[in-house]
Amino acid sequence: MALSIERIQALLDDSPFIAFLGIRCTAVSESPATTTLELPMAPALERGRGSNQFHGGAIASLIDTAGDFAVIAGSGAGVPTIDLRVDYLRPAFGPRLTATASARRIGRTIGVADVDVFDDDQRLVAVGRGCFAIVSSSEGKNS
Image 1 (cartoon, rainbow, N blue to C red):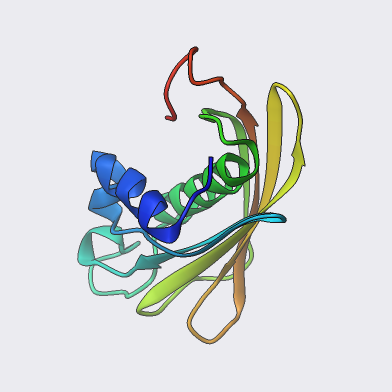
Image 2: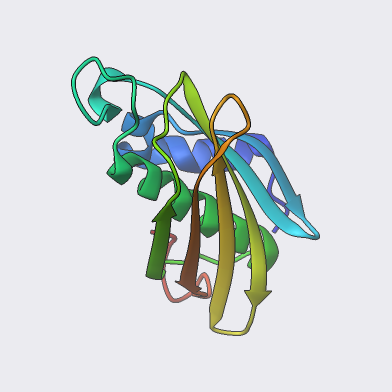
């Protein structure tokens, strides 16, 4: 399944939670399987009111979503999350965060993706790794 930025964005917008976050797709590649997503700052995503610091939950959601779509780009299948690890490296401030995800391994039933999250000053603010179940289209839909 060939994925375009527009197709991924339509899938992102179809999820009420991801649409609430405002995540936007800016790049996708099938070989190597990568995606780049952006998360804009919004008051509901702040760690503390008026802090302009992203809440860790919003960052984890960005990592999960970026990793998910990197594995989808490489496998063409739905990929619900099995496991997610997030390491927060520094406070994340600014108008947006950018997550770059790379599928490290895509097997028959499991896919693994690594994700780097940067602020607008290109500082690495978090890293993550997701493990995803590769589900054929007859078994179910993407999470």
